[in-house]
Length: 280
Image (cartoon, rainbow, N blue to C red):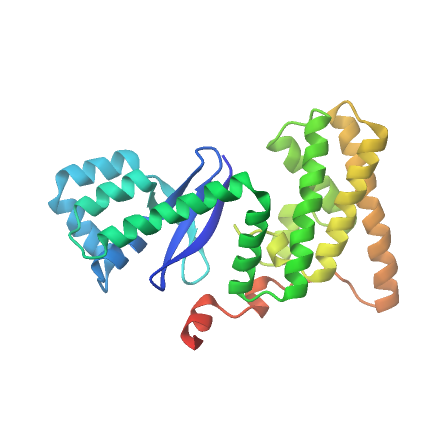
């Protein structure tokens, strides 16, 4: 199950959402929805009282609403009660609010935008660029990041062609490439940057992104040329692709006199969403 977290805005209020690729639907943070519909200063407490009062709603949410990881205001990943469109509509029935109808329309718009993006990948790229701009990334970094997505897609398409299985094998090959060029396994790299659930690439510098992209593009071209038949053969190709970027990294570090592998992560140099909102 592949999930992608996003921050949506309704009437200048934040709603944390997670897109489930398997089920092809959004899951909305229920406490964020309650905060908008009720304008309560303590939406968590409001929800607890609501569920205690409405036994049927309590049973419905317990059965149908999963706990999914979402980012808190402090930047930490926490399991959060979430619901899809159907679940949220059921919740709205129990909360009399003048914002109920506009919120329904907003949910429909969010879903429609995602469907459009699935039909037209260019829209997904535009959405990604918009999201990165909102988070405060520079245009140079954003352009580099979007390019890495294209290169990554070419690599995974090539893996699929050669029979590599999605999931564990994709992750294993990615780890081989990363270890070869950076000297770190993916988990070690994230620990070095002080990351937990965050996306490693979203916390790479321009140089790190460029080297990672070189490694993956090299692995793709080598695979096309050599046409590996087994996972073991793919692993050797992945290692050789990573070696191309490793050589480039070593040469650049020799010229710079320092490592290009940085401990910096996005939160170290990006303004927080809250700070940006306060200034607007």
